[in-house]
Image 1 (tube, rainbow, N blue to C red):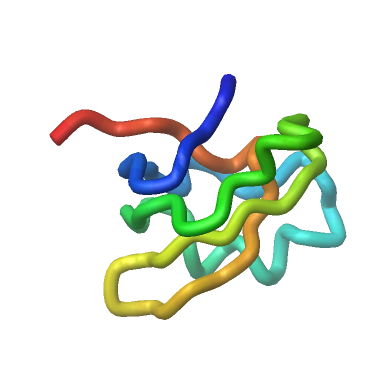
Image 2: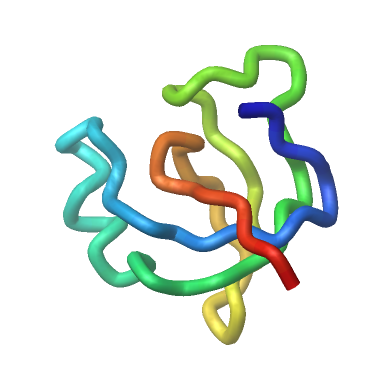
Length: 70
């Protein structure tokens, strides 16, 4: 899946990389907007900058994100 700046996403699961799990648990279920996609690599292990509602901006693994409709 190719993510683009401005798309709305949901953190729908923790990353499959277990080292991210403790960090990710607090974000699962939150919505946000892609602010800096990794369009060069664009693989599940690459990090993307996401502005999460009321939680600030974070770099998150792509495998935990899902696009949402308005």
